[in-house]
Every structure is written in structure tokens, then in C-alpha cells.
Image (cartoon, rainbow, N blue to C red; front, side, top):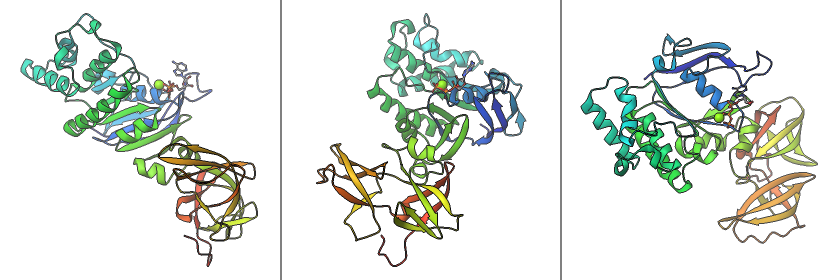
Length: 364
Ligand SMILES: Nc1ncnc2c1ncn2[C@@H]1O[C@H](COP(=O)(O)OP(=O)(O)OP(=O)(O)O)[C@@H](O)[C@H]1O
Ligand SMILES: [Mg+2]
């Protein structure tokens, strides 16, 4: 197991006109479970294939600890990769499919048997070991592919590219926790690609958010939720995502329309900013009790466990999460309060500062 270090690594499929992965420097630390999260087309698969050696990057070098592997083949890198769709030998039994990566590397027979049985037990394949892979449904076949990726104990990393797409939703949860269990057992470095935030947040020690070929933020799930450093992370993570609202810095005060919503947490040049606050933290208050911005209610979504109150501040939508069965009504004017410790300032999509409470205004 080694740290996987990308130094200035970037890839273009069209001779440098556009970058599928923009040149980046980044280290995947040994033995951690990462989720690589981002929307379709942002470069996740390209990045994974660069790490495994299926793609030689247009720019940059790749190191496993101090060893430069940029020119080394996939096999030479000792990477196990699992793809979105089943990759297996259909005429072979499940057992032989699972054993293949080990036999291929001359692992002694008793050890092959031990590993195959261990992995198949974990993935619930022990009842079908003698069955031909062709005779399994697509979901089960994909679980065998997953097993093939996990069966080797000596690998530099296991890369999984949206591995549960064809698997039944109910099974997904089980398999994800199995994967976590396997990760705890083996201590492999895992990089799990997904565009599904729930999948990423439940699986990973660290979530790496990719947008438009660049890493915009990496951190523990709670960090991405509570402290997004980029607008993209604010709206991609969370459901619904973070509210973004145009505001103005005037002196040391942050203003939305005519209302002061707080002081700047640190000195910033005056001018336009956007404030970001998650629906979970927006408070609907009575006029006059704390700094509040007038907002017109446009709709209430009754979600069962909670209500989502949709409002307009001027022409900008702000959603507040409220208790289930709230009494808000469409067209009523309410006041929104943005708690200073949960509200951030953004310029050019990047977080540039924080909000501080207004002095002497009884702000919570
Ligand atoms: N073989 C290729 N030739 C040319 N362009 C490609 C190739 N593969 C990917 N691209 C382009 O590179 C960009 C990144 O693609 P990539 O497949 O890495 O994204 P992704 O995040 O894995 O997307 P998805 O979630 O849809 O799997 C996209 O604009 C895509 O169209
Ligand atoms: Mg992909």
C-alpha cells in the first residue's frame, strides 16, 4: 500500500483544446476510503483510469510513494479496478472468476481458496460458487465483478467506478456497508466513484468533490455539509442544496436588499458578494425579534418528517426547512434569519469569508 501522488496531472482528449481533467496536484493517502463525487462528465472516470494506468495523462507525473509509475502498465501498478458493468468470464463458474486474479498472480492454492471463500461469504455469493456466471442476473454478475476487485490482498489500491449502478437499490445499502467492512479488514486504499451524494457520504472517510475536471473541495462528509468552500459543493451536496443569495458588503456590514444581515467576519473589500446558507439553518422569525430579511412564501412542501418552505427574497428563491405541519401559508410575508455561524460569503463561487453577528441586535 502506498500514497498515490498526482503531480500536475491533467488529461485532454483533444490535443489540449479542452481538459477532461485539469492539471492537478493531489495525494490519495494510503489505506483511506475515498469517494470521488461529481456530476456526469466532470472527469471521474478519466481520473480513475489515469491512476490505474489505462490512460497516460497528457501532462504530469504519478507516484506511488517515491516510485514514478507514469509509464508503468496497469498490471505493473498492482491496481484492482471494478467497472460500472460486469466484467467477467461468462463460461467460468463464480468460484473460478473470483479465483482468477489470484491464480493469475501465482498465489498458492490454499490461499486462493481461503480468499475466494472469504470474499464470497462477505458478498453473499457462497451459495452460487459453482454456478456459471452466465446464469446469474446482471446484478449478481456485478457483485461477482466487485468480488474480483476485492479478492487480492496485495494491491496498491482498489478503484471502483460507479460499481453498484446495475445493482438493486435495496441491495446497494447492504453492499456499501459490506464494502466498508472489507475496507476495515484489508486496509486497502479505496477510491469509489459516484455521482450520488448519499452513496458518497455514507461510504467514505473522505469525499473528494470534482467539478469540471478540477477538485473543488475534499473533506469528511460533515465538513462538506457544514463548511463548503465552493458554491458548487454548497448546491451539489445537501437536498435541497445551499441557498445562494446576492448581497452587498458596505463597510463592515453585509446587506441583503435594505437589510443588514450581519457583519463581515473578517475584513473584505466592499462590493457584491453572495451569501450561502443551507435550508436546515435558515430560521423563519417574527419581524423585529432578530435581524431578518422579508420574504414572500411561495409554496410549502410537506415532506413528512419536515416541511420545506419556499420563499422569494426579492426575486431570489430561498428555501427554509421547518418542522412538519408548520403553519406557513403561500403569499404570507415572513422574515428570514441567517445565523452567522452557518452563513458564508462567496465571491466568484469561492468562499471568501464568514458572517459575524450584528452588535447589540440580540442575534442568536
Ligand atoms: N474517450 C474519450 N474521447 C473523447 N472525450 C472523452 C473520452 N472519454 C471521456 N471524454 C470526455 O471527457 C470528459 C470527462 O469524461 P469522464 O467520462 O471522465 O466523466 P465522468 O465524470 O466519468 O462522467 P460520467 O458520470 O457520465 O461517467 C467528458 O466531457 C467526456 O465527454
Ligand atoms: Mg464515468
